[in-house]
Image (cartoon, rainbow, N blue to C red; front, side, top):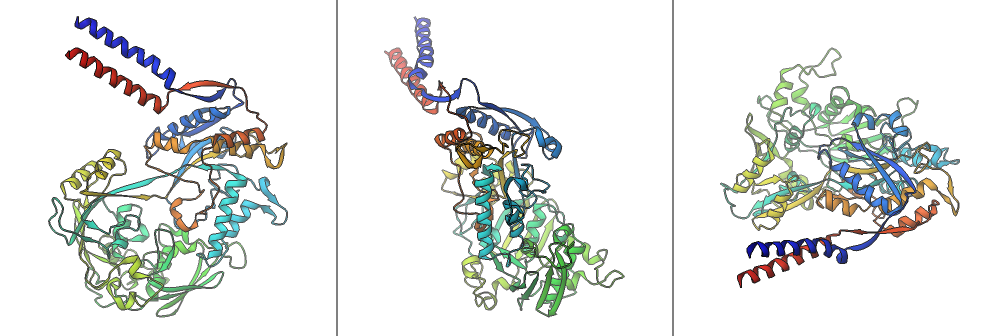
Length: 630
């Protein structure tokens, strides 16, 4: 009797599995009997975010492009192949790539210009040559953008907005996809911590409201990081070292989260002409005492800024970033001038607007590091013992000073009581700083006086430490299950922040690829080429939201700009957006000469189908159980 009941139950379930999709599936037109054409797509074999994620992106793009009669063949290649110009010239039509890192300037020369080393799209000035400009319009936009002064002017911001709109509407070398997001958890008793602004800019606003589980004191914040290696900004190449130096030292200029630039060590800066800048240094900024106690009463001045810029140009690992720096002159103790030449090959000095982010650098103590020089009596002798001391025990003018370091265990930073951040006479009387709104510090009392940075190289160990209360903040970016758990727990607060990350579906614009790079004008609209029409059709047919939900769990940010979305004010708020629109995709396919073919209706098992099937199975199972109980 029992076996008979089991057989009936099994049969009913099987019938449901076959029958339910037949009346719950949405009938969706998905593909032509024959594709109009086939495109070759490639991406890298592995990435820092997983070996198959980009491949999964392209698999979904393949399925979506079938809806407009385009077939996609996908291959995986090595990164070296993807940047090989001879390989890229004819080996692909579409590929997926991502850029990360970068500074605070919107100049993407090297990627979107004709001779850029990373111009993998194959943009050429012949594509949009303008007789009046004597070059391609896109090329003109990019070159002109590096000449507009001041670097942070409204004129320059508007210029880059116009360039982005032009590039994405008239050239369309790529479809921006996603920006990586960081997810940070903190205990909810930590008030006014803002991950987007950063720990330092939040410090003057933060406090603990009571103690959380495992917390010993409310005047100390405990975080985790990796091993730092060198605290001298001239030679750093790891995030842990950079974070530590920024906590102890001050930059000449400060970029907020929206990339708006503010004076900092510099009280003011002005362009005297397009290649000549004058910088006024803020007075009254006291240096921390050096580790050897040799210089107990030093104040920052123009000598320190001159020394720092000189070292960046002639000594640092990043010296190539300062080739534009032609000359530095000290005018007086608190004034210096810098001379800019963006193109040393020409007789006259040329503007170079991206320099502003380069001078927003941490300022070094000239009095400590310049005790001896080389034979030229100018270049500091980096073999002097002070340099070794500074590499592992740096000091500055910033919010914190190094108190104790236990190798492989932790670094403890104490609030610097002499820091000018805490001196209201220096901060509140300068309206350009907007100090109270940006940094807080309502009075000289700061509730949290110590920062402990524990060295925990493994994420899961850090998460465990956070949950028992021995860490106050933790990064859970790669652990989506923790995001769900913490967001449902009132003990914790979850924040997100965009990274400097730009994911792109790229198009090969070269005419040798005679489909998406086709330069023939459309017969019904001579203002657009067939290749551009196809690229627009593809862009509208790609459902980035669906890809993000399925592959990324919805955790990335969908983007529309050809530059980092993190660049804030530089991103055109009204840029053309290729949101998923199948009808618009078909309009451009037909404009390119591909009439909507006879569509074969095909049943797709949608999420609604799956939900309905589960619901039916649940009901039937319940009925069987009731019947069995009877």
